Image 1 (cartoon, rainbow, N blue to C red):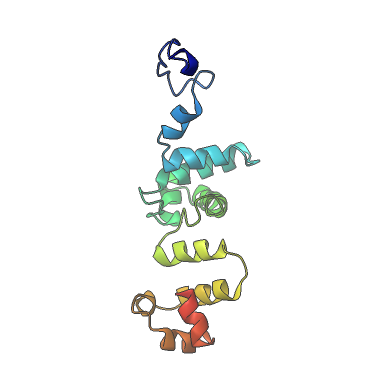
Image 2: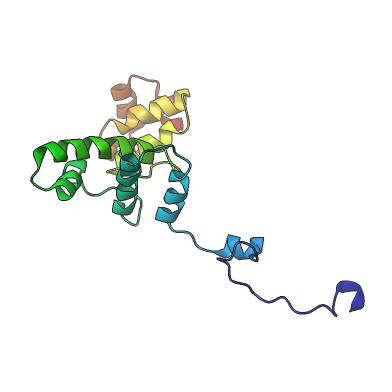
Length: 168
């Protein structure tokens, strides 16, 4: 026992929120919400107070899957009320914040629908022939992708069918 530290006191679990005493295992086991993860990333952005408020508002407006269900115009109207000038400025600020949000991790966060989510994830893959083909596929009805209709998608996208099959 002495050789393996059997005489040492038993490890006591410490508060995982106390950064000074938390072990790596404590911190790794802690669940972090999507919103908390995004807020953490937002801290690294150089934003003024208004831009940060718009970004935080969008982060808190995401559904559980990371989608932005409400249109920007509706969100701006909810914030600005009947003041049309304020509504326009708020909508502009939210659109800029949406751009920052959609460039955060995980890829696809802040999308308004599945097609936009897929496009954002594919754009993360950069500019490869397969990524370009996959982006072209996202611009066509998703039912074709669901049916894996590579012949029709190849014609619509103007690419060879093997490239469409690889992108699917």
